[in-house]
Structures are given as C-alpha cells and as structure tokens.
Amino acid sequence: MSTADDAPAAAVTTAGQPFPYVPFRTIAERNGVALRAYGEGTPLIFMPGMTGGGQATLELAVRVAEQTAAAGRPLRLLLVDYTSEDHPTFDALRDTVEALVTPALGGQRTILWTESLGCLVTPSPRFDAAFNVHKRVMISAFGDIPQLPLRLGLVGMAIAPPPLFRWVMGPMGRWTFGPPGDSPDHVFFKSLQSLAPKVTRRRSAWLVARHFQAWFQESTVPTKLWLGALDRLVGIERQRSFFGELAAQRPDFQLSIVEGGGHVVTDTRLVAQMVSEITPWVLS
Image 1: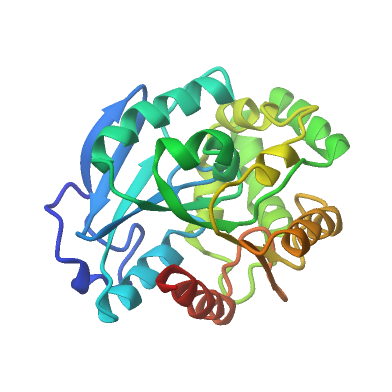
Image 2: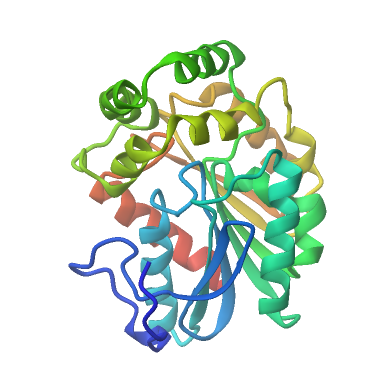
C-alpha cells in the first residue's frame, strides 16, 4: 500500500493504475490490522474478504467513488486491511476492527461496503450502531458454507506443502471463485495464491459448523446485496433462496443477481455493470 498523502476525492481514477489503484495513506494500526484512507467526504468503510486486502472488489469501490465525486458527492475511502492479522477467532478480529475504525469516524454517518468474509467480520447486530451505518453495500454474502468441501479443504491445507498449495490454488482458485471471464490474471487470483496455507486455513476454520443467517435478518439499515449467479463457493441456490426471501420480506433489503458472475466478479464487462448498479445505490 502506498503511504503517499491523500489526493482529492475528485481525482479518484483506476485508469491504468495497479492495485490498490489510488494512493491510500495508513492512518492507524492495531493487532496486525491497518486502516488506510483516501479522499475526503462521506466515509465509506471497505471491509475485505478472505485475502484481507480488498483485491476482490476494491476496484469497484474506487470506481464508484470516482462517479459519486463527479456527481458532487465525494467519498472518503477507509480500507480495513487485515492481510497481516493473526487473530484466533472471528470475535477477536471484530474487536480489533471496531477499536481501530471507530475513532477515525468522528461520529459521522457511514456507508459500509463488505465483501464475502468481510460481511461476517462486521455483522449488522454489532456494527450498524458501532459505525453509525446508514447504508450497506454487500457483495457475495453468505449465511453458511457447504461443510463437506470446506472440511476437505481444511485437511488439504493442513497436509499440503506450501509450494504445492500455491501451485494448486492457481487453477483451483479461478474455478472456485470464478469464472474469471476475460481477467484470469486478476489481482485477486494472484493474492489468493500468495496467501500462506496456515492463514487461509485459520480464517476458513471460522466457518466450520457455523450459521450466520440471523445476523442478516437483524440488519437495521438499508442494504443491497450482489450475488454472482455462478458462485461455486457458497451453495448459490441456497443463498439466493435465503436472501431472496429476506428481500421479499423487507423493503429496505434488495438483492441483485450478477448473471455470469462468480463469487468474485473479475470480467471487465460485469465489473462495469456492477459499478453502474452500485453507484446509484450509494447516491440514493
């Protein structure tokens, strides 16, 4: 991550820029978690998924910030980077995230953007109030994970030598989290492959025999969720059914299905489509 000073929000651009696309500045650190900031305006807290650094959807958030700034509604991007965390439990990581982020908000109303595992790191019952959230963007949320492949994966990660794990995670990551579309070399797949097996195993183990549906049902703020129709990781039909029912029951919860998208959407056409849908939601 760059430590250059923040640039004005209106200058946000992803054009030709490598990850993380804009010059974030580290403003606080705690227990291996770093809070990085860019721009000025309404705080948008970005909570990454399994890789911890936001490689899956940070490009989406930066491009949405570019468009909201052009519309006269700049955002201050606050990236919660937990790449280097070493917490034993979900709850311990949540404690760190709350203690790290809350002082940076100054009581301002915020938008909370969560992807995949990040949706469970900052669940509604605790963080809607803690972060004074007035709107949520969720991508690839899930209420539970199919247990057999999860447990088999944990065994494989425990016995595979790291070089073998990284070699397998190349094609396996693209299949499990894709389809990659026209971006098989997307930064997300590279970051997934570079994760230490013990880190992936520790974070994945937090999902064993756990069900999180109640946390989504207890949400107190307007929320819109995007799910990839071809998601191979989470049992997508089960997730579509659960979140579809939630959307039917609650006028403040919306569900959008990304046709052709997987758990992580990397195809450039689908990324542009998601930006065009997320921006008006953030501005509304």
